[in-house]
Every structure is written in structure tokens, then in C-alpha cells.
Amino acid sequence: MEPVSFAQLPFIAKFATMGTYFLGWVCFAEFVIDRHGLDRFLPFYRVGNICPYEGLVVALLALLWWQLHRAG
Image (cartoon, rainbow, N blue to C red; front, side, top):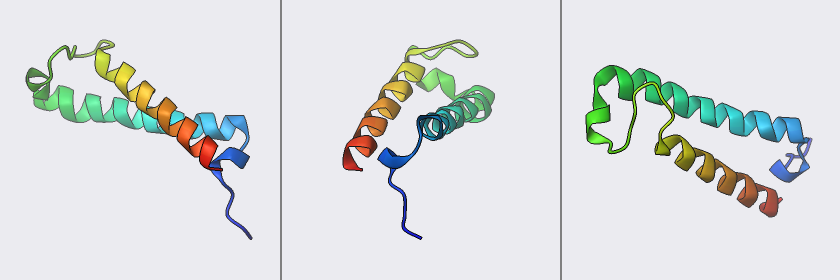
């Protein structure tokens, strides 16, 4: 069997992969940042609400998607 590149995957597999990484960020924010009070060190962070950091994570994942799709 040969390895399959990211570009060869169906759209739903690509979307699920990026969604998993985003949910990883959400879990990290919930279980580490919110529960340990680290939000006081992050400007513009809002506990339990959408903040600029989610937008940054989505932008980084979109960049990663584009790079992986181009490389395949």
C-alpha cells in the first residue's frame, strides 16, 4: 500500500481532519486556559465566548489546509 497525500483525500476527510484540530484547540482552551485562570495572561481572551484566538486558529488551519493541498 502507498501512502495517500492530503490532496487525494475526499473533502469530508479533509474537513474532519481540520475540524479535529479545531476541536483540540477548543478543548485546550476549555480545560487548560479557562480552568486554570490563564486567561488573565491573554489579552482579548473571553472565557466561554468567541475571541480573536479562535479566528487565529481557524486562519492557521486554513493556511495548513492550503499548504497540504498544494504539496499533494
